[in-house]
Length: 113
Image (tube, rainbow, N blue to C red; front, top):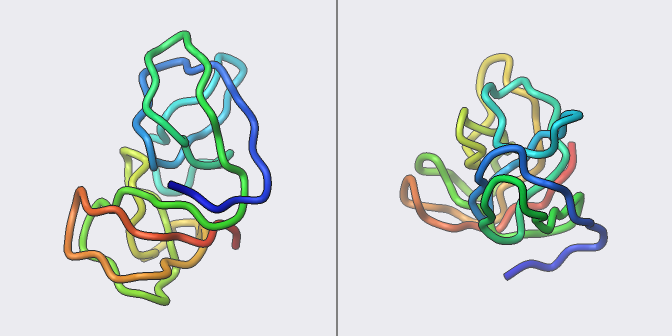
């Protein structure tokens, strides 16, 4: 599902979904609550709270879109960790590499600012 150059595993503080951004706290990883949260990477598979999940830190990975996205657009996160087009004060998370027709569609994203 992914082509990435670095990653690791982390304990989930809440259930996480494959292909969504994750933030890291002392309690573990979870999906971000805001588009300005500091992110660690992307979950490589879905996992329950208290279990370890694989996380991609950089490279190219398939991600779940939170809305329609265009190839070449700057990537950001919504409040569920899904990739969306960067807007307003959202922090850039990478580049969307292919168009997606709407929420729930998986698209390739090159991680990084």
